[in-house]
Amino acid sequence: MLVDTHCHLDFEQFDPDRDAVIRRAVDAGIGYFVNIGSTLASSGAACKLAAEYAEVYAGVGVHPHDADSFNQETEDKLRELALKNKVVAIGETGLDYYRNLSSEACQLNAFNKQIKLAKDLNLPLVVHSRQAEGQVIRVLRSAMPLKAVIHCFSGDEGFLRECLSLGFFISFTCNITYKKAQGLRDLVKLVPLEKLMLETDAPYLSPEGFRGKRNEPAQVKLLAEAVSLTKGISTKEIADTTTGNAKDFFRLG
Ligand code: NI
Image (cartoon, rainbow, N blue to C red):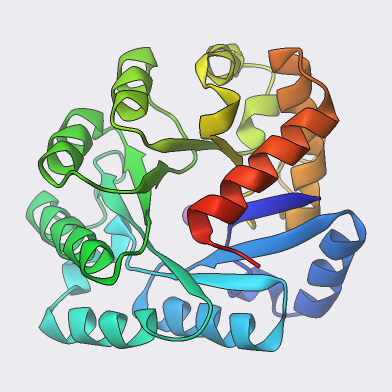
């Protein structure tokens, strides 16, 4: 069994065939999906999917891209959503200084508020970090103790080692299969198996051979094979361990 620990099945890209996508993934051996919210509306949709499908769990949060809109009302509504059945994480939240779609001040505010929410409710945090590694580590370090996963890992070795030293989990997406991603594959080798999780971030980041197409959770299987090749560990052991990690971390099942 495999787990897609970060996907966006609520996105409109899945409107025409969402049910078929989920069935296809279940048939491919994906036992659980964590559908991650990116806005208040998307977090609500994630909760709906979790109510509808036994295999789907929800994360509720506001992505750094949408941090400009984060206010007291957003915070109150997120807290309400977070108390719903099958909500297993706060996120995604974090800092994105690559696209800077929201101001740095608003991103920091939304990040800090969501960290507090995660701690108040004893839920793990799903962290998005892009070209903001130094600041992300400063914020997370000052909030310890904290249970967190750094999703779609894209930092350097120094950032990776800091995250591991704080006990965080690291999750990789299908972009490790790209021809030019040797640097990322080198980092995959450095992550202890007991700290590793798998995710598609679907509909984004389709694996090599499928680039430009919509990604979907069934591709976690291909990702597990890529991690197996990279680490020189059997696909079965990768699947068993990352599934165990995901079930413990998100308290699935
Ligand atoms: Ni995402």
